[in-house]
Image (cartoon, rainbow, N blue to C red):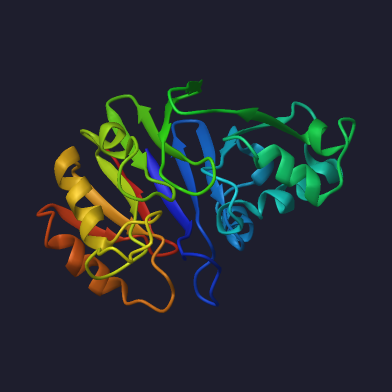
Length: 250
């Protein structure tokens, strides 16, 4: 599998880094995972969006989902109407996207995009890929995603605080793409729905991951400090999911 980072900024896009979005490719199968603002343009620089096999959205927060509307408009104007492109997402995503375009049940968006609600414990076979979903710890329904292809395994945390199914789904991962939204030490006042850099390292260590790629680092934080803090708990390879980076699993 190859994972190309389309964007990895936390909360919002910045001039040099879009929101969260990744292109997963294995053999002839391609999946856009999270559709943060700015990532549709980056996706189009790497492949024809109409050729995607599916979209996976971890949760409905804007920095992970809004460019799905750009994809809808792009496909709707004659590039791809049938078959509708599968969009795997937790509860609430279909309703939010439909609300943006004031869509009833007969709206064009439902001919272009086939929303398929998934929940923790669900799994999907998609071409070369097997996707399994787990519980993330976040204020809205949110998913951890594990993707297997042949003998390779990739796990994406989405947005999550400590707990949930991340360690289970990351066990034995060749690549753990894990949010590290905060630096420093957790205390009683720390936001409970994101991870610190050290916690990302601890999860990688407990899961026995081969490579940790830290992502969702805010634009006003130094990614090298995030790597340094993660490395205090994980002795394996740690990289920053910088936009334009491609990671390969073997």
